Structure formats: structure tokens, C-alpha cells
Image (cartoon, rainbow, N blue to C red; front, top):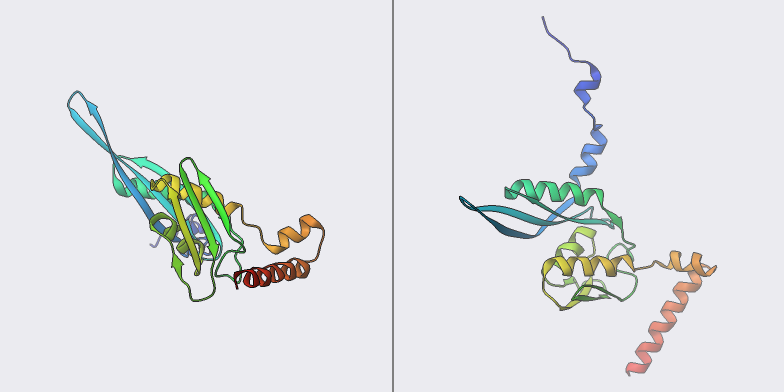
Length: 195
């Protein structure tokens, strides 16, 4: 005789749609740090993982987790990063709206918009973040420390300061078209001053 489980238990807590949504996420391992605790019997090793998670469409999160084993540390960091995801406004779905600076501790970053076809010009931890967010064209420079933790936090500080024309328009009580026209007018003045 075949025993059938109740429908609730078969489906599980996550509906199929949510499971599919989670699998679309891009997970990037930025850094792993091995730490040793000296005890009476010798050394006990632990591992700390720094992970960036994004959906490739403007949402990204980062987290840091520790464990006795590397896979467990990565899994814990990934789960925490999924819970901390923030939305970043993108221009045409490929670059940022304006140049921006960010800093955290001794880490300082400068992010600049780039024309189509430029690609991601950035190093190490910053590249992982841009790929997870879905940015395709950007020029970035990190100054100060090359510590991946500070670089990631400085990059997130910069990304959180990005404002879309819609956000600026609502704050100023103007139309989006006025803000975009001003931006294009300013770009034209800059090109004239360069000549």
C-alpha cells in the first residue's frame, strides 16, 4: 500500500517560484581568511568568508561569516548576504547614473560612468560587486587600503549614494525630463571646456 504524504509537507516551506528566484542570484566569493586560535593542545583553525550576492538587475548584498570549515563559512555568508540585499539604481541597466565617491575606514573608491562597450575596469573585490549588481560599463579606482573588507564596504557606501533622475526630480519637485536635460547640458559644457 502506497503511503502519501500530506500536500503541505511535500511542497515544503518555500514555494517553487521562490526557489527558482533564489537560484538566479550571482554569488561571488571575495575573500577567505584563515585564523588560528592557540589552545593547550595546539592550534584550532577557523575560516572567515566574505561573499557578494546579486541578481544582475540592480540588487546586491554582501556579508561576512565565520566557521570551522570553508564551505560552511561560505554558506553562512551567502545566506546573510541574501537577507541584506539593497537596490542600486542603474542607467540603461548597464552603468551608474553619475560619478560618485565612497569611503570606509582607510578604503576610498571613485566610481565613474562609462559609455557602452567600456566594460568593467576595476580590481578584485570591486569587480565582483559590479558583476553581481549587473553593471556592464564602469571605471573604478580604489585608493588607500587594498583590504577587501574595507574596499567592499567603501564600494557599497558609494553605490548607496547614487541617485536616479527620478529620485532627484521628486526631491526637487521637478519633472524627470528637466533633470535629464540639465545633465545633458552640463555634459556639453564639460566637453567645450576640454577643447
